[in-house]
Image (cartoon, rainbow, N blue to C red; front, side, top):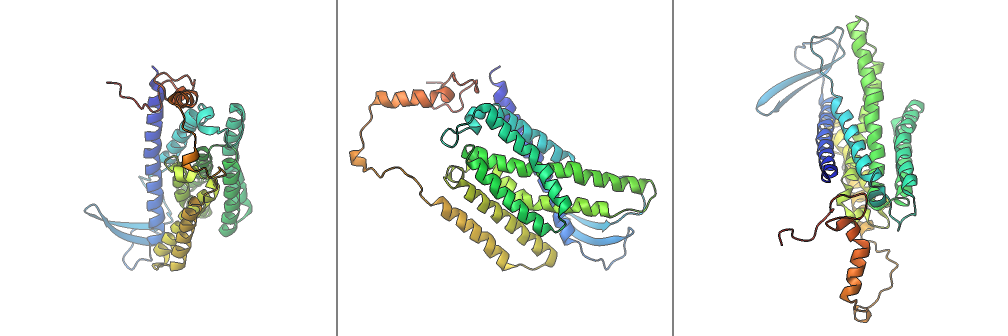
Length: 350
Protein backbone atom coordinates (compact mmCIF):
# COMPACT_ATOMS: atom_id res chain seq x y z
CA UNK A 1 0.00 0.00 0.00
CA UNK A 2 1.36 3.47 -0.90
CA UNK A 3 0.22 4.83 2.47
CA UNK A 4 2.49 2.48 4.44
CA UNK A 5 5.49 4.82 4.26
CA UNK A 6 3.32 7.71 5.46
CA UNK A 7 2.01 5.61 8.36
CA UNK A 8 5.55 4.55 9.23
CA UNK A 9 6.51 8.21 9.46
CA UNK A 10 3.47 8.98 11.62
CA UNK A 11 4.18 6.13 14.04
CA UNK A 12 7.89 6.91 14.24
CA UNK A 13 7.24 10.58 15.03
CA UNK A 14 4.60 9.70 17.60
CA UNK A 15 6.85 7.08 19.21
CA UNK A 16 9.83 9.45 19.18
CA UNK A 17 7.87 12.19 20.92
CA UNK A 18 6.37 9.80 23.50
CA UNK A 19 9.75 8.19 24.28
CA UNK A 20 11.39 11.60 24.47
CA UNK A 21 8.76 12.90 26.88
CA UNK A 22 9.19 9.87 29.14
CA UNK A 23 13.00 10.07 29.07
CA UNK A 24 13.36 13.83 29.44
CA UNK A 25 10.60 14.00 32.04
CA UNK A 26 12.34 11.36 34.16
CA UNK A 27 15.71 13.07 33.66
CA UNK A 28 14.34 16.47 34.66
CA UNK A 29 12.61 15.00 37.69
CA UNK A 30 15.70 13.30 39.06
CA UNK A 31 17.86 16.35 38.36
CA UNK A 32 15.33 18.41 40.31
CA UNK A 33 15.39 15.79 43.06
CA UNK A 34 19.21 15.67 43.27
CA UNK A 35 19.46 19.45 43.56
CA UNK A 36 16.54 19.71 46.01
CA UNK A 37 17.49 17.16 48.69
CA UNK A 38 18.72 18.59 51.97
CA UNK A 39 20.23 17.12 55.18
CA UNK A 40 17.48 15.58 57.28
CA UNK A 41 16.45 16.72 60.76
CA UNK A 42 14.09 13.76 61.22
CA UNK A 43 14.63 10.07 61.95
CA UNK A 44 15.97 8.12 58.97
CA UNK A 45 14.88 4.83 57.45
CA UNK A 46 17.98 3.92 55.45
CA UNK A 47 21.72 3.80 56.01
CA UNK A 48 24.23 6.34 54.65
CA UNK A 49 21.55 8.88 53.83
CA UNK A 50 22.86 11.79 51.77
CA UNK A 51 19.71 13.88 51.87
CA UNK A 52 15.93 13.76 52.15
CA UNK A 53 13.04 15.39 50.38
CA UNK A 54 9.35 15.92 51.18
CA UNK A 55 6.93 16.73 48.36
CA UNK A 56 3.24 16.81 47.56
CA UNK A 57 1.77 15.99 44.16
CA UNK A 58 -1.55 14.78 42.78
CA UNK A 59 -3.25 14.70 46.16
CA UNK A 60 -0.55 12.64 47.90
CA UNK A 61 2.46 13.36 50.12
CA UNK A 62 5.84 11.72 49.48
CA UNK A 63 9.04 11.24 51.46
CA UNK A 64 12.34 10.32 49.78
CA UNK A 65 15.79 9.45 51.03
CA UNK A 66 18.86 9.63 48.84
CA UNK A 67 21.43 7.15 50.13
CA UNK A 68 24.33 4.79 49.43
CA UNK A 69 23.02 1.27 50.25
CA UNK A 70 24.89 -1.33 52.30
CA UNK A 71 22.56 -4.18 51.41
CA UNK A 72 20.30 -5.36 48.61
CA UNK A 73 16.60 -4.57 48.51
CA UNK A 74 13.71 -6.61 47.16
CA UNK A 75 12.66 -4.09 44.53
CA UNK A 76 15.01 -1.71 42.71
CA UNK A 77 13.66 0.19 39.71
CA UNK A 78 15.74 1.57 36.83
CA UNK A 79 15.00 4.04 34.05
CA UNK A 80 16.68 3.23 30.75
CA UNK A 81 14.04 2.01 28.29
CA UNK A 82 12.72 5.44 27.18
CA UNK A 83 16.23 6.65 26.30
CA UNK A 84 16.91 3.61 24.15
CA UNK A 85 13.49 3.86 22.49
CA UNK A 86 14.17 7.54 21.74
CA UNK A 87 17.36 6.51 19.95
CA UNK A 88 15.67 3.77 17.93
CA UNK A 89 12.74 5.93 16.82
CA UNK A 90 15.10 8.83 16.07
CA UNK A 91 17.25 6.62 13.86
CA UNK A 92 14.07 5.40 12.20
CA UNK A 93 13.05 8.96 11.39
CA UNK A 94 16.51 9.82 10.08
CA UNK A 95 16.47 6.68 7.93
CA UNK A 96 12.98 7.18 6.47
CA UNK A 97 13.15 10.92 5.84
CA UNK A 98 16.69 12.27 5.77
CA UNK A 99 18.52 9.25 4.34
CA UNK A 100 15.95 7.46 2.17
CA UNK A 101 14.60 10.85 1.15
CA UNK A 102 17.99 12.57 1.06
CA UNK A 103 17.43 14.21 -2.32
CA UNK A 104 14.38 16.00 -0.87
CA UNK A 105 15.08 16.50 2.85
CA UNK A 106 18.87 16.48 3.16
CA UNK A 107 20.28 17.95 -0.05
CA UNK A 108 19.68 21.54 -1.08
CA UNK A 109 21.39 22.39 -4.41
CA UNK A 110 21.35 26.07 -3.43
CA UNK A 111 23.66 25.22 -0.52
CA UNK A 112 25.95 22.49 -1.89
CA UNK A 113 25.96 20.08 -4.80
CA UNK A 114 26.11 16.61 -3.22
CA UNK A 115 25.21 13.18 -4.47
CA UNK A 116 22.72 11.24 -2.39
CA UNK A 117 25.41 8.74 -1.36
CA UNK A 118 27.83 11.47 -0.27
CA UNK A 119 25.17 13.33 1.71
CA UNK A 120 24.10 10.17 3.55
CA UNK A 121 27.73 9.23 4.25
CA UNK A 122 28.40 12.67 5.76
CA UNK A 123 25.28 12.48 7.93
CA UNK A 124 25.85 8.92 9.16
CA UNK A 125 29.59 9.46 9.65
CA UNK A 126 29.01 12.52 11.84
CA UNK A 127 26.53 10.62 14.00
CA UNK A 128 28.98 7.73 14.41
CA UNK A 129 31.83 10.05 15.42
CA UNK A 130 29.91 12.26 17.87
CA UNK A 131 29.77 10.04 20.94
CA UNK A 132 33.29 8.48 20.72
CA UNK A 133 34.82 11.96 20.52
CA UNK A 134 32.72 13.19 23.45
CA UNK A 135 33.58 10.10 25.49
CA UNK A 136 37.29 10.57 24.75
CA UNK A 137 37.02 14.18 25.87
CA UNK A 138 35.32 13.23 29.15
CA UNK A 139 37.95 10.59 29.87
CA UNK A 140 40.80 13.01 29.14
CA UNK A 141 39.43 16.10 30.91
CA UNK A 142 37.99 16.08 34.41
CA UNK A 143 37.03 19.76 34.61
CA UNK A 144 33.48 20.01 33.27
CA UNK A 145 33.96 23.68 32.41
CA UNK A 146 36.68 22.67 29.98
CA UNK A 147 34.48 19.89 28.61
CA UNK A 148 31.68 22.36 27.92
CA UNK A 149 34.10 24.82 26.33
CA UNK A 150 35.25 22.13 23.90
CA UNK A 151 31.66 21.01 23.29
CA UNK A 152 30.73 24.60 22.46
CA UNK A 153 33.53 24.80 19.90
CA UNK A 154 32.61 21.41 18.42
CA UNK A 155 28.90 22.28 18.22
CA UNK A 156 29.70 25.62 16.58
CA UNK A 157 31.92 23.88 14.03
CA UNK A 158 29.23 21.28 13.29
CA UNK A 159 26.53 23.95 12.95
CA UNK A 160 28.65 25.97 10.52
CA UNK A 161 29.76 22.92 8.53
CA UNK A 162 26.36 21.31 8.06
CA UNK A 163 24.65 24.62 7.31
CA UNK A 164 27.04 24.84 4.35
CA UNK A 165 26.47 21.23 3.27
CA UNK A 166 22.77 20.50 3.85
CA UNK A 167 19.51 22.38 3.65
CA UNK A 168 18.71 24.54 6.68
CA UNK A 169 16.21 22.15 8.29
CA UNK A 170 18.51 19.18 7.73
CA UNK A 171 21.48 21.06 9.22
CA UNK A 172 19.55 21.82 12.42
CA UNK A 173 18.31 18.24 12.64
CA UNK A 174 21.82 16.87 12.05
CA UNK A 175 23.37 18.93 14.86
CA UNK A 176 20.49 18.05 17.20
CA UNK A 177 20.77 14.36 16.31
CA UNK A 178 24.51 14.40 17.06
CA UNK A 179 23.95 15.86 20.52
CA UNK A 180 20.97 13.56 21.06
CA UNK A 181 23.05 10.51 20.15
CA UNK A 182 25.67 11.61 22.68
CA UNK A 183 22.96 11.77 25.33
CA UNK A 184 21.49 8.35 24.57
CA UNK A 185 24.82 6.57 24.15
CA UNK A 186 26.01 8.08 27.43
CA UNK A 187 23.03 6.40 29.06
CA UNK A 188 23.77 3.10 27.31
CA UNK A 189 27.55 2.97 27.66
CA UNK A 190 28.21 4.93 30.87
CA UNK A 191 25.17 5.36 33.11
CA UNK A 192 23.64 1.87 32.79
CA UNK A 193 26.96 -0.05 33.09
CA UNK A 194 27.87 1.89 36.25
CA UNK A 195 24.42 1.25 37.70
CA UNK A 196 24.84 -2.45 36.98
CA UNK A 197 28.31 -2.44 38.56
CA UNK A 198 26.92 -0.94 41.78
CA UNK A 199 24.00 -3.37 41.89
CA UNK A 200 26.37 -6.33 41.48
CA UNK A 201 28.53 -5.08 44.34
CA UNK A 202 25.52 -4.75 46.63
CA UNK A 203 24.15 -8.17 45.73
CA UNK A 204 27.55 -9.75 46.26
CA UNK A 205 27.72 -8.26 49.74
CA UNK A 206 30.68 -6.04 48.83
CA UNK A 207 31.24 -2.47 49.91
CA UNK A 208 29.76 -0.06 47.38
CA UNK A 209 32.27 1.79 45.22
CA UNK A 210 30.64 5.21 44.91
CA UNK A 211 32.98 6.17 42.06
CA UNK A 212 30.61 4.27 39.75
CA UNK A 213 27.80 6.57 40.84
CA UNK A 214 29.99 9.64 40.36
CA UNK A 215 30.81 8.63 36.78
CA UNK A 216 27.15 8.05 35.97
CA UNK A 217 26.09 11.30 37.63
CA UNK A 218 28.64 13.30 35.67
CA UNK A 219 27.33 12.41 32.21
CA UNK A 220 23.76 12.57 33.51
CA UNK A 221 24.37 16.21 34.43
CA UNK A 222 25.88 16.82 31.00
CA UNK A 223 22.71 15.38 29.48
CA UNK A 224 20.65 17.76 31.57
CA UNK A 225 22.38 20.72 29.93
CA UNK A 226 22.16 19.23 26.43
CA UNK A 227 18.40 18.69 26.64
CA UNK A 228 17.02 22.14 25.79
CA UNK A 229 19.40 22.68 22.84
CA UNK A 230 18.49 19.25 21.44
CA UNK A 231 14.76 19.90 21.79
CA UNK A 232 15.11 23.22 19.94
CA UNK A 233 17.05 21.58 17.11
CA UNK A 234 14.62 18.68 16.79
CA UNK A 235 11.61 21.05 16.65
CA UNK A 236 13.33 23.33 14.15
CA UNK A 237 11.50 21.88 11.15
CA UNK A 238 8.67 24.17 12.28
CA UNK A 239 10.94 27.27 12.45
CA UNK A 240 11.60 28.42 8.86
CA UNK A 241 12.47 31.89 10.17
CA UNK A 242 15.53 30.31 11.78
CA UNK A 243 16.40 27.45 9.44
CA UNK A 244 15.92 29.43 6.23
CA UNK A 245 18.09 32.41 7.20
CA UNK A 246 21.55 32.76 5.60
CA UNK A 247 23.01 32.92 9.13
CA UNK A 248 20.95 30.00 10.37
CA UNK A 249 23.94 28.41 12.10
CA UNK A 250 24.45 31.56 14.20
CA UNK A 251 20.78 31.53 15.22
CA UNK A 252 21.07 27.84 16.13
CA UNK A 253 24.10 28.45 18.34
CA UNK A 254 22.53 31.45 20.07
CA UNK A 255 19.33 29.51 20.79
CA UNK A 256 21.31 26.54 22.09
CA UNK A 257 23.31 28.92 24.29
CA UNK A 258 20.05 30.41 25.52
CA UNK A 259 18.80 26.93 26.46
CA UNK A 260 22.02 25.92 28.25
CA UNK A 261 22.19 29.18 30.21
CA UNK A 262 18.52 29.00 31.17
CA UNK A 263 19.04 25.42 32.35
CA UNK A 264 22.06 26.47 34.42
CA UNK A 265 20.09 29.32 36.00
CA UNK A 266 17.34 26.89 36.97
CA UNK A 267 19.83 24.40 38.42
CA UNK A 268 21.44 27.13 40.53
CA UNK A 269 18.03 28.19 41.82
CA UNK A 270 17.35 24.61 42.95
CA UNK A 271 20.79 24.08 44.45
CA UNK A 272 21.33 27.42 46.21
CA UNK A 273 17.71 28.56 46.55
CA UNK A 274 18.47 31.93 45.08
CA UNK A 275 18.26 33.40 41.61
CA UNK A 276 21.32 34.75 39.82
CA UNK A 277 19.97 37.55 37.65
CA UNK A 278 23.24 37.72 35.74
CA UNK A 279 22.54 34.28 34.28
CA UNK A 280 19.04 35.33 33.27
CA UNK A 281 20.41 38.50 31.70
CA UNK A 282 22.98 36.47 29.76
CA UNK A 283 20.35 33.97 28.60
CA UNK A 284 17.94 36.60 27.34
CA UNK A 285 20.77 38.58 25.74
CA UNK A 286 21.45 35.50 23.59
CA UNK A 287 17.75 35.19 22.80
CA UNK A 288 17.64 38.85 21.80
CA UNK A 289 20.75 38.35 19.66
CA UNK A 290 19.10 35.40 17.88
CA UNK A 291 16.03 37.53 17.16
CA UNK A 292 18.29 40.33 15.94
CA UNK A 293 20.21 38.04 13.59
CA UNK A 294 16.94 36.74 12.14
CA UNK A 295 16.05 40.33 11.20
CA UNK A 296 19.25 40.88 9.22
CA UNK A 297 18.50 40.95 5.51
CA UNK A 298 21.40 39.45 3.55
CA UNK A 299 19.51 39.16 0.29
CA UNK A 300 21.69 39.88 -2.74
CA UNK A 301 18.75 40.29 -5.07
CA UNK A 302 18.50 43.69 -6.74
CA UNK A 303 15.83 45.98 -5.37
CA UNK A 304 13.55 46.07 -8.39
CA UNK A 305 10.54 48.38 -8.20
CA UNK A 306 7.29 46.45 -8.50
CA UNK A 307 6.11 48.68 -11.30
CA UNK A 308 9.03 47.66 -13.56
CA UNK A 309 8.72 43.92 -12.89
CA UNK A 310 7.52 42.03 -15.91
CA UNK A 311 4.11 40.40 -15.54
CA UNK A 312 4.32 36.66 -16.12
CA UNK A 313 1.70 34.83 -18.14
CA UNK A 314 -0.41 32.03 -16.68
CA UNK A 315 1.32 29.59 -19.01
CA UNK A 316 4.74 30.63 -17.70
CA UNK A 317 3.60 30.33 -14.08
CA UNK A 318 2.11 26.86 -14.68
CA UNK A 319 5.32 25.76 -16.39
CA UNK A 320 7.30 26.72 -13.28
CA UNK A 321 4.78 24.91 -11.04
CA UNK A 322 4.99 21.74 -13.13
CA UNK A 323 8.78 21.90 -13.25
CA UNK A 324 9.39 22.54 -9.55
CA UNK A 325 6.31 21.50 -7.58
CA UNK A 326 4.33 18.65 -9.05
CA UNK A 327 7.11 16.09 -8.77
CA UNK A 328 6.33 15.94 -5.04
CA UNK A 329 2.97 17.64 -4.57
CA UNK A 330 0.82 16.20 -7.36
CA UNK A 331 -1.77 13.50 -6.74
CA UNK A 332 0.63 10.99 -8.32
CA UNK A 333 4.19 12.21 -7.56
CA UNK A 334 6.91 11.44 -10.09
CA UNK A 335 9.62 11.80 -7.45
CA UNK A 336 10.50 8.23 -6.43
CA UNK A 337 10.87 9.28 -2.78
CA UNK A 338 7.11 9.75 -2.40
CA UNK A 339 4.18 7.48 -3.09
CA UNK A 340 1.48 10.00 -2.17
CA UNK A 341 1.25 13.75 -2.44
CA UNK A 342 3.04 15.57 0.39
CA UNK A 343 0.61 18.49 0.43
CA UNK A 344 -2.49 18.58 -1.74
CA UNK A 345 -3.88 21.99 -2.57
CA UNK A 346 -7.06 20.71 -4.15
CA UNK A 347 -10.34 19.41 -2.79
CA UNK A 348 -10.74 15.73 -3.67
CA UNK A 349 -14.51 16.06 -3.38
CA UNK A 350 -14.67 18.82 -6.00
